[in-house]
Amino acid sequence: MSSSIYQSKMAAVHVEDISHIRERAPLEKLPAEILRLIKLTGLGAESLAENTNPYTDIQHDLITCLLTSQTLKDTALPLVYRYVKFSKASTFQKFLVQITKYPELGRHVQSLDLSELGTSQAIATADLLQCLNLTPLLRSFLAFPELELSSQVLQTLFCSLPQLQTLDLRSCNSQESASAFESLFANADLAISTSITELNLSNCSGFPENALQRVLSQLPKLQILDVSRTTVDGEALQSIPASARLTHLNVQHCTQLRGRAVARFIASHPSVQSSLVSFNAETKATLEDAVLDEEDVSKLLASIPKTVKILNLKHSIMTPDHLPLLQALSNQLDELSVGSDLRLEDIESLFLTPTTSAPALSPAESPSDIRPEAVKANSDPVLKSMAQAVAICNVRQRLLRIDVPDTPLWSLKSIDISGMHIFQQRKILTSLLLGDHSLPLTRIAIGEEVYLMCKDLKRVCAAVGWRVEWDGRACEILRD
Image (cartoon, rainbow, N blue to C red; front, side):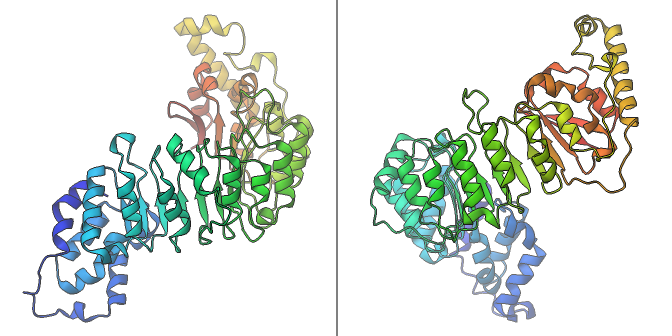
């Protein structure tokens, strides 16, 4: 919540006496439901309903309504308290004082977002527990990283909020939180709220797998699950109730999860067969034994549900033998992150019609900073400019040899090749992926090392209608 807004006005509007306004305006005579709709429409209902941080100009305007008249105050107050977000612990304390003094205000709170509080802005466990007890109709709770969770707080979140749908405890990985989690779910008779549809436990690597399994087994309405970087294993996934309908599943970097178990779950579990839209099974590039080996990838690709649109198998052992399976999925998926042992030519073949063959790449057309003379060119400004001009001519000539199909046979809009070997990624400088024939492809993700190595990348991409964006960690090539 915006501290300045709260500190200057919030404390006053709840107790301010505005009885001096004796006459009710025609607008005030409308039913409360109509007034609420008018406010939502006039102040941007869509933004307020969808934005997890509505405390901007919209929130300021709502607070202004509180000061206008008693009628408008009564209808605006629930909207002010519906979504609550904090960036300072001091603001949270003021909020807690307010709902403690006026408990009816706590019943308006539907979303409590603490995600922007840092460890330096930590709040006491007792205060958090008191806040949760005063917001019994809470539907969404987002914790901040390293929040210390007591067993009482966890029990309240999982068991005592009957309307809670979204629970985000990402990075709550302190030793105290892990111990409390294990202690609480050691009780086999503990009944978890069945209303939870979205659960995020990412980066909670200290939570034991048996406790995770007990949680997952009691969520019959689960739709979105993020257990990346946790100790979740195959048994925990299989324990998810058959009645769940998962749309998003993230098991990225789960070192206890074997590839065979992943493939079996995707192929057979009722919770994903008719609903799964996004599946992330990326593994660490440094693992000697990849979670998804060649056989696992074959089984997984063959059993991907028809509903899946986003698939991330980055750093899996993916070879040219998987191309037929990838080709079959290319007209279903919107986003694909590929594994390690493919060539860039293999990826290019996904964007060619059956009657089109890829133009051969002559040695002279090799990307300039792959060839030995690139070292000299990069140190000489004249040679560097010439090398860039040659690189641009090469990629343009190669793209001109490809016919643009009337109707693409693929649906891929985004492809991530950052899990491939660096040498293969560097071929992007002359890649067919940059041509118009690859539409609707509009995004190509490459690795950090490739961006730093390929000095010509920005100029070459700009010459053929693409731009390069770099945020310090990841690199994206986006079609203009």
